[in-house]
Amino acid sequence: MRFTRTYKALGVAAVLALSLSACGGGSSNDSTDGSNAGGDTTKVITANTTEPGNGLLPANTNEVGGGRVMDLIFSGLVSYDADGAIVNELAESIETKDSQNYTIKLKSGETFSDGSAITAASFVDAWNFGAAAKNAQLNSYFFESIKGYDKVSAEGSTEDKMEGLKVVDDTTFTVELAQPESDFQLRLGYTAFYPLPATAYDNTKSFGENPVGNGPYKLAADGWKHEISITLVPNEKYNGPRKAKNGGVTFKIFNNMDSAYTEVQSNNLDILDQVPPSGLQNFKTDFDGRNVNQPYAGNATMTIPSYLPEFQGEAGQMRRQAISMAIDRQQIIDKIFYGNKKVAADFTSPVLDGYNASLPGADVLKFDAAKAKAMWEKADAISPWPAGKVFTISSNIDGAGNKEYITAMANQISTNLGIKAELNPIATFKEMRALVNSKKLTGASRAGWQADYPSLYNFLGPLYGTGAGSNDGNYSNPAFDAKLKEGLSATSVEAGNKLFNESQEILLKDLPVVPLWYQAVQGVWSENVNTVPFGWNGVPLYYEVTAK
View 1 (cartoon, rainbow, N blue to C red):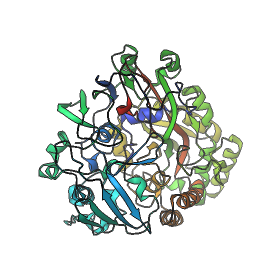
View 2 (view 1 turned 180 degrees about the horizontal axis):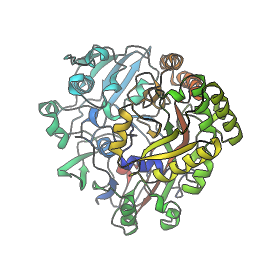
View 3 (view 1 turned 90 degrees about the vertical axis):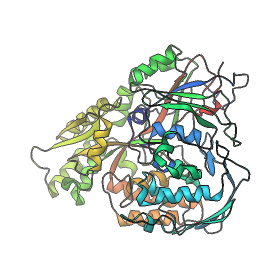
View 4 (view 1 turned 30 degrees about the vertical axis):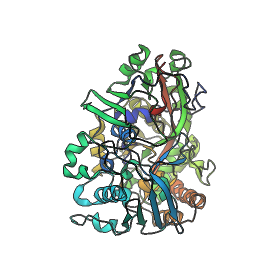
C-alpha cells in the first residue's frame, strides 16, 4: 500500500513494513492456516496502524493506514485468500469470452451494514464517481481500463459516467474495457472497486468520516478517534467468506514502532505487523512461538529519474547499470537487516504467479565491483560525469531503517565507482513525496511497492508505463509500453505473465529503478491471542484472530 496503496508512496507505517522486510523462510510458527479452534470469539483484538491520510472512501484511500480499515469494513466482487487466490464475495459470477466484455452477476439479498440493498448500481455508481475528474479521487486511474474513462477523467471534464459501464438489472451489470486485459478480474478485490450505498453521495466528506460499508466489520459508533484509535465491530449483516472470529478490532495509532513493540511485549497490544529495526535481531526469541517471518508481494527499489541529464542516452544507461552492480545488496541485508531480506532478481515479487527468477539480463542486479567500475569508466568516455557532482539518494528519515541502509548503499557506490554518493535526508514522508512528485529531484530517491492485487502487471504498469500515476522517474519506452499492452491483451493470465516478463527484459536494460530486495513481513503478537495468520500482501488476517 501499499506504497501508499496504489500510489504506494509508503507512509511511515508502510515504509516500516517495507524497509524491515525479510528474506522469507516462512513463519517461525507453522500454524498459519487461520484455524484458531477453541479461541474466544467475543473479545476485541488490538492492533497497530497509522492515521489514515484521507476520509474512508474506496476511490480515495491509497495508503496503508486507511487501506487496512477499508478492507475490513468493505467487501467487493471478490476478495483474496491468504495465498492471493480470488474468492467470490458479492459476485455470483464474472464472465467474459474475450477479456474485454464482462458480464457480472451479484449474489441476491446482500446489504450494506445499514440494511440498504447492494445492487448493480452500487458498483456502477461508485466506479463512475471514482473515475470522474471532478471528484478528484486518488485511485481514479484504476478505472482507466474501462471504455470512456478518458472522457470522464480529462482535466476540466464535467462528465461523470463511463461509456463502458451498464446496469442491466438489480443484480447484473456489464463492463466494456477499452481493450482486452488479461488480468482485469484479478484487480476487482482492490479497494477502488468497492461499492457504495446511495447515501454516500449526499456528503462524501461526512461519509468518509463515518462510512457505511458491507465487510466483515463496521465502524463502531464514534469509532474513529483521530490520531488515537479506530474501533471496528463485527457486521452482523455480512455473509461472505471472511466472517469475523473475534469481537472486533481496535486499531491503535502509533508513530513510533519501538513503542508499539514494547506494548506487545507488555501484552498491551495484541498484533504488531512490523518489527522495528531495534527488534529485528531478537524478535524470534522475544516472541518465541508468537512471530512470523514470511515473504509478501512487495519490493524495495531506488528510482533514478529519466529527466536527469547524466542518466540519459547510452552513457546514462551504462551509469544506471554500473550503480546497480556497485551495490552489495547481500552485505546490507546481513549487516543492517540481520538477514531478513532477499536480494531482488526482477521488478516484481516471488510470491506472485508467473514470477521468473532467471530473466535474461538480470546479471545487472548482481554485485560486481570490478565490472561496475569498468562500466562507469566506459560511460565517462562517452559523456564525462560532471566534476565534483555528488550522486544523492533522497529519502525520508522518519521511516525506520531508511537512513541506515541508504547511507550504507551510498558508501558502497562511492567506494566502488570512485565518485561521491550520499544520503539526501528528508525530514518527513510527506515532504519526501512532495519532492518526488515535483519532478525536481537532482539525484535518486528511495522507493518501494506493496501490491494492490496479485498480478505481475501491478508491479509494472503503474510504475513504468508512460504517464502512469506512480511513475516517479518519468520513465518512458514505447517498446515497453507495447509489450505491456500485448500482455494485457493476452487471452489468459498465464499467457499475459509470459509477456509481462518479456517486458521486464526491457527494464533490465534501461533500469528506470534499481531493484534492491524483496519484502517480507516480520510480525509478532501478544500472549492474549492465538496464532495470527498473515496474507499474501503482508497484512494480518484480522478476522481470523481469536483471543485465548
